[in-house]
Structures are given as structure tokens and as C-alpha cells.
Image 1 (cartoon, rainbow, N blue to C red):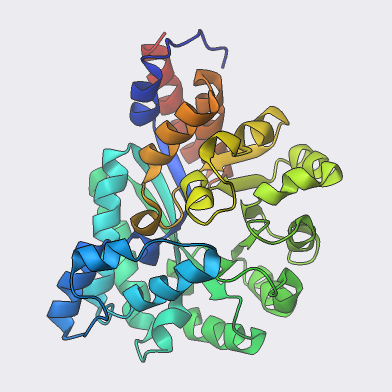
Image 2: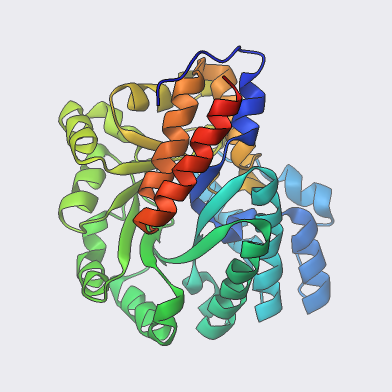
Length: 344
């Protein structure tokens, strides 16, 4: 779409109002401190924090692992199907306010099954919230992630537990601590998921090297790379990603909070876009990283000087990269075009 320039003072409004898809949201990472304490009270779970303020003040992360320690502690309050529904419903209300019209939710069943919470409880609660999100104008689906700091054998066990709910899950992913847990560790389980017809994605190139992205593409045969910002260190990889239109689900405020970039002005999202990569903007773990979708867009654009053309490209990339039908993609892009037309 050939865009007329949008005045800089109107750009934040455009960023907020334009329809968008979120393809990299860990639903457990949307669990706000207030809801953590409410669920803890409901379920009789003791927390190692005195109050909401004490928990929030602990969100001073130096790297991925320092975040994960608190992330797993927060998830301990999730025990019932209603807990999982309430968590996802709270996210969808925020997503709708940010004009997200399609969301693909990551969830970490191993975080819960290890605590004795059954797969059925997790999946059914989240799925019910996805169905009800349609009332908010959001289409939604679930992507089950394997925790890469655990073994591939445990990933296979998780896959077996999920098979009765295969029709409620559209794909699998790979998350948790990246460094020291290369993608090849999960080659066999990803091959099995491919045989089952599941979509495949993986975190790679957040803190890990470009080699992890190559391996995720060539060995795991993933369709999208989650994060992927370290690709900029490898020109051949950049060319490959651009040529094959492999989407990167970039999470700017997450990258800032986890010290992947020292400040947003130095984030390489604009570099990735200008090199022709199918980058998208996402919130990752918004309750912990200080912002949902519109926060990520407005703060990153303010820091990097990107313009309306970049905004359109990012939103369109998010729709094209979604695991939806061609008809759904066309409808989503038509809505995007109409929004931008109104800003001419």
C-alpha cells in the first residue's frame, strides 16, 4: 500500500488504532501482580512477597534467567480451569483495547503439570477464554511450548499428554532459557509434531547466537522465529530470512527489560524491516516487561523514529504470518487498509 505521510503528532494515534495481530505472547507472562494475589487468596497459596507493590518492585531483571525465576513463582497460583480462564480473559480485554484482532497464545504446560495441575485443566481453561474472545472481536488460538531447559524426553511426555486435546492446539513452540539449550536438543520431538500436522515455531536469537536461528530453520523446520534479533549479526542469515519471508516475532520492550539492547533507540527493529525481513511487534510477557501491544508500538516508534510505512508493514506482516486461512488474512488486511485510509 502506497501511503501518504502521516503527521508525526498523529502517528501515536495511528499506532494505537490500527488493527494488529499478536504472535508472541506467553499467557502466563500476562499475569498481573493484582491477579496473582487475587488467585493466591482464592486458592490459599502463600507468596514470598508481602503485597502487590513488593512483587512489582522485584521486576528488575538483568537477563532472561532472572526473569524466569519470578515468572515461574507467579505461575504457582494457577491451579484450576477457572484460574487459566481468568488469566487469559484479562489478557484479551487488554488486547481488545489495543486493537489486537488476532492472537496466538503461547502456554507452558510443563510449568503446571510439574505442580500436579493436569493438562486438561490448562488447555480447557485457556481454550474457553479463546472462544469467548470472539465476543471482543479477537480470533485466538493456542501454541503449546516445550521448556528447553528440560529434557527432550519430558517434551515427548508433554506431547503425549496433549494429544487428547490436539484439536484445541494449532502448534508447538520452544521457550525458556535459550543459552546452553540449542534447538537441536529437540529435533526428534519437533519432527514428531510436524508429522502430527502442528505448526512449528521456536525462540531463537534472543540471547542465543545466529547459529540457533539457522538450526531452528534447517533442523527443526520452524515456520516462524520468535525474537530473532541476533540475526543482524549474520548477513547470510539476514538474506535467507528476507528471501524466504520467515517472520520474526520481535518483542522490543522485552528486549529492553532483559538487557538485550541497552535502550530502545538502539533496538534493531528498523534495521530488520529495512533489510526486508518480515518482522512483527509483540509484547512477550507484558505484565513483567512494562507494556502490552500499543506500549511496544508507541515507545519503540518514539525511540527509533520509524514512520507510518513501517507501522503498516509491521501490522501487515503480523497478519500474513498468522496461522490463519487466506480468507482471514485478506479480511484482516482489508481492515488495516481501511484504518490507514482514514488517516490519509
